[in-house]
Length: 380
Image (cartoon, rainbow, N blue to C red; front, side, top):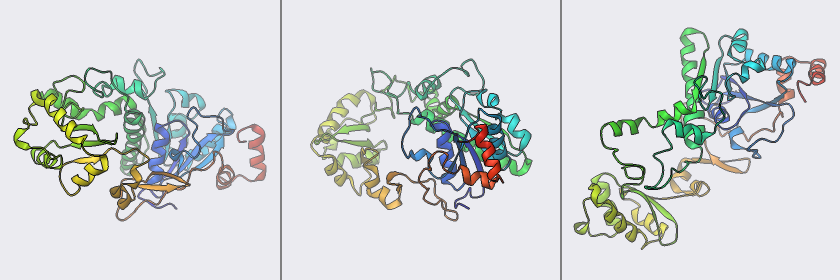
């Protein structure tokens, strides 16, 4: 049995892209026994990445779900599972014969987690889309960008991962908790629009209170404030400044060798353009590492802007083991942390279908049964 707070929880993951695999990774990281159902004959994925970290920590069985025998095999896996997760468009799993009703007929205790862009209903439910489309409708894309310029896609972190996979994993855990009293599973409908909108809750509060009055790039946390932004250093790199509170701003002024008496009041929005130029000029006098060294041990809220590939070497991340090397790929470690049931370092991703024989043996298939499945085209 794996270690972690979810040890003993069995999950069947119907292979997909981005949000569902991320949810499967999170559950596996925390100790769940996640079995990914891949295609019997793996083809080229849209974003095919060798040893994709999103596939870490779980076994893979190759099944052709276009055959009755393949569908029956997945249903048998679901009979032993606590959770099944999928990321297809609404209705696809049902047409496969693997929708909630079909699964619950075999195991009513299964938590059936599904993640889509638009949700299971609504006028756009059957429409195609990607992260950028979902967060645009959710109101999460418009605030991101510079004043007077177009919105900037925040990679696919807000929709696919934060508003999608993470939301699905949270929903699954909530449903598992509820099952301890009801004894029944239920369907978790995670929509990336819903999740991305949820991430903007604080913005709605600030807007209603009148403290987010400006357009894009003109507010407190969107780069509009000169004390909450990024600045280029002498060596062409960048530092991040988050000196909002007065005492933090005072510490930053000292780090930058500025004369406090000559500076405009940092919270006076009318003075932000002038103050921004003062800070930018001061920052350009130093390299990134020089500034970071000057800020060390202070509350100036000044940090280096690191690439994902640099981040593992930062002393804070190194001290906590925030990144781990799995199969030769440096990647984020499981999070959060638990004092009594810590998660182990995940295994490297298995080849698609690599564990089919092992899983079939666990289900009780003998050589003749395996041969029959192969003949029917249910497995490769």
